[in-house]
Each structure stands twice: as structure tokens, then as C-alpha cells.
Length: 207
Image 1 (cartoon, helix red, strand yellow):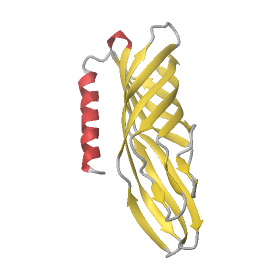
Image 2 (tube, helix red, strand yellow; image 1 turned 180 degrees about the vertical axis):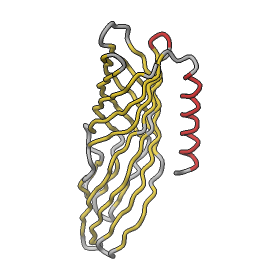
Image 3 (tube, one colour; image 1 turned 90 degrees about the horizontal axis):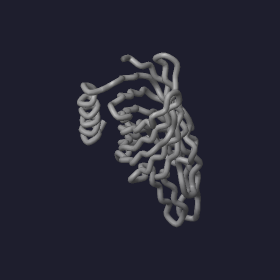
Image 4 (cartoon, helix red, strand yellow; image 1 turned 90 degrees about the vertical axis):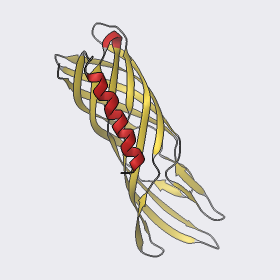
């Protein structure tokens, strides 16, 4: 894990810790769902990434309908590239693990049973994996640059007793494309910077 990402995570944990003392409620659980958009744009590769996403979640309720949510979301990323022209002939497979750490400010509308909410915040993303080239038979480990995303979303929260369910739609705009491949005299493909996820959070209210 890069030093920059460690600093960002420490700041996130600090923000969460400072919000616990005035918290009205704390809920811990997990979030999971599917990516609704493609993770690659351009030509020259076929995405073989899994569309599912999942990971642990913490939700801290604050006064006046506000709250803070922190997630650690895992994705399995992969692509297959096959391209040839007069100067180049190659085939490669990439397999990588992607982790996102959204830190979100939430506002829950005052409603008795189902509470609609809006959310927005920031998410760092780290990807690491390997690329196997069939041209030379080598498998090379790859550390991609850390991405930074702006996150907005909307959903609703409801539950029974201490059990909470929170379906939502979440949009993330990333500042860069960790995967960026340019063929000489050929196509180019890269990571998509626009991402839409459909998620369901399941958590248990501790107090």
C-alpha cells in the first residue's frame, strides 16, 4: 500500500473516530451489489472483470438527520487484449484486485418508516495485479497509480428492530485511468472514469 494511500486512510479513520462521540447511532455491516457501467473504454481489449462488488461498512448516525458512512469495497478486475499489425503482434491477460474506500456524508430525510437519503463524499482507490504476455511468456506484477473519486448517491433506509437495509444507486467520477494502454499505430483502451453501482447495505445497529 502506498504511503499516500496510508495517509488518506488515516485521515478517514480520524474523521470517523471524531464523529463517534456525538453519534446518535452506530451500525456495522456489509455492502454489496453490481457495477452498472463498463469498466473499460476504447478498443483493443475485452473486459473480463467481475461486475460484483462487496465489503464491510460502518454507518454513524449524527443529529439533524446527518450521518457518516465508511466502506471498503472490493472488486476483481481483468481484461484480455489481442492486437496485431505490421509492426506489432501481442496477446495479454491482466488480473488485478481493486479496493475502494468511500467516506461519505449522508443526509436522511425525516420519514417515519422508510428514510430516503442523499450522500456525497470522497473515495481513494488502489489497484494491484499482474499482466501475462503471451508474446514472451512473462507474467509481470503491476502497481497502478492511486485514483481519487468524487462520490454522490441516493437511496432509502428501512429495517426491523436493529436490522437495517439500505438499497442505493451510487455514482463515482474518477480523476484518472489506472489502466491505460496505447498500441503503436493501433487502438487505445483505458479504465472508465465514470462508474455507477447498484448497492445494498445490510447492517446491525449497535446502539
